[in-house]
Length: 413
Image (cartoon, rainbow, N blue to C red; front, side, top):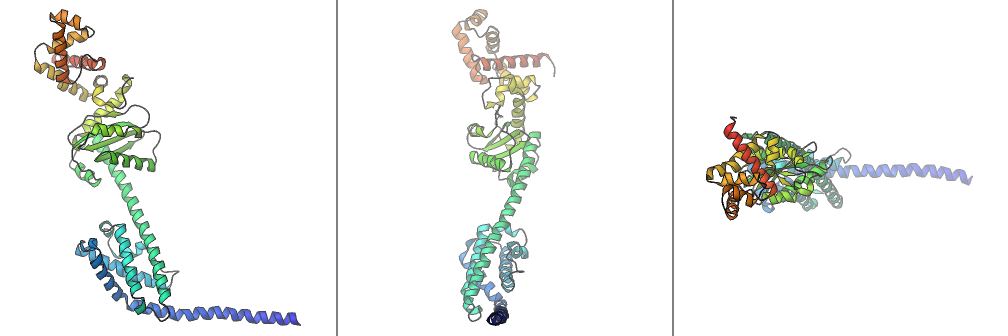
């Protein structure tokens, strides 16, 4: 008997409890609807107050063009409207920052940064909080304030995601543009569009330019490539990075010591030779530096003891053997031509000195001069050409330059 009564009592209480929960939800609904009605009625008040606060507190907002300020007003109004819709129905409402910014053109995100967006969110939140006493229904102040804080937090996270995606997209586009610019430089396509492209990549264009080439250590992923670009841009005022398979090309520009800056990036290259091209005056001439560096990279196996990094012009003889026309012109213009232009016995002395195995005494005997005279002439040759005949490697470069010059005089090109 008692057990049956207990079961009947339990069955009676359970529907009562269910009705109690339903009654609470029913009681909550009119309060929420009243709050939504008050908020909608006060939308214009909140928007106007937010715009006044923006103008009073944020210098960057005052500096914007009038059109951008009007778009921000629409964004603020959209954010308040989205909050009201979310407050009315959290399951179907949206706190997505992309939805809030949908009222404005995409270009607005380029005019204001993530920091500016978060300041905008903060001010709108403060305005709503300050007006809770006026807008909230009796007994609903705390709930409205908690809802505003929750919504603003979600909007802030969503805004960060929007800007992160935009930055990722811009980064991918910059990487593609940078690859196109480097490829254009390697081909020597220094047309008018080159300056606008490098300007979009942040190239200031002050000072000289050089190109550095080598190989990568394995395949670089996106993280490794990004870190390499950051390292190059920390090293020089201007920097471009191109990765073509296993080949790594770095273009440096600026007013500092570019060769020294290039050497600081040596550890970023993989094993094997690294070549630094000749320094040029402008980025448009970087194709010449790139061609010399790439040619030297092919020729460097012929000089097993070449330093790392090695200058492209230190490999002029090996580049000549590969048929590099730039190396041919450099040997004629910078080595043979100056000696020929000076006239006198310097060219003859150099030729005899190299043919006699770099012997001062033998050269002096054949020229009927004192060894000190030979020594003086050799110093003048080093001053004029920049290559020291007494140094084995540099003497080799001078010997090839003499051969190239004599051939150019006797064999028409």
